[in-house]
Length: 125
Image 1 (cartoon, rainbow, N blue to C red):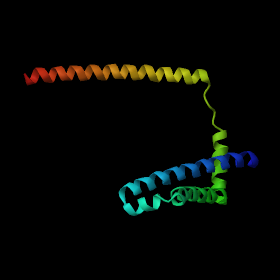
Image 2 (image 1 turned 180 degrees about the horizontal axis):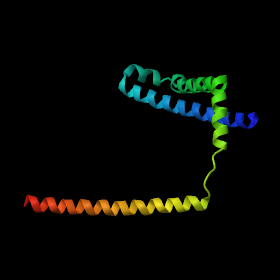
Image 3 (image 1 turned 60 degrees about the vertical axis):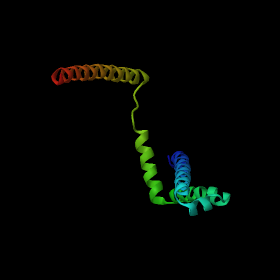
Image 4 (image 1 turned 90 degrees about the vertical axis):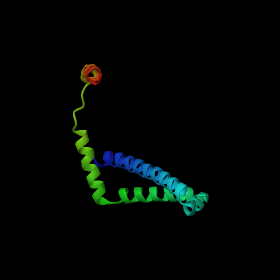
């Protein structure tokens, strides 16, 4: 089971590192818009691309090579494998019920809103 989970964990850690790099890039861009010093650093391509990639790599390495994180991720994967997912028929039925309830709620709230607006107009006139 470890081999299967290690592939899943590695992909998850790579995705986490990629998202971290994107977040760092966005934060760096926001800081560059606010502070001129950061804008000067951001104009250097090695800094602009190197910092997000470097931090993303550090996040990946810290996740991939930390035994406690790997044990936790292994347990998460094992628990997710135990989940009994609903069938397509059940999902369609539940979605239909939710849509119908939303429509009914919208009509009821719209009616109350309209009636209360009319009552307030009558009271103010």
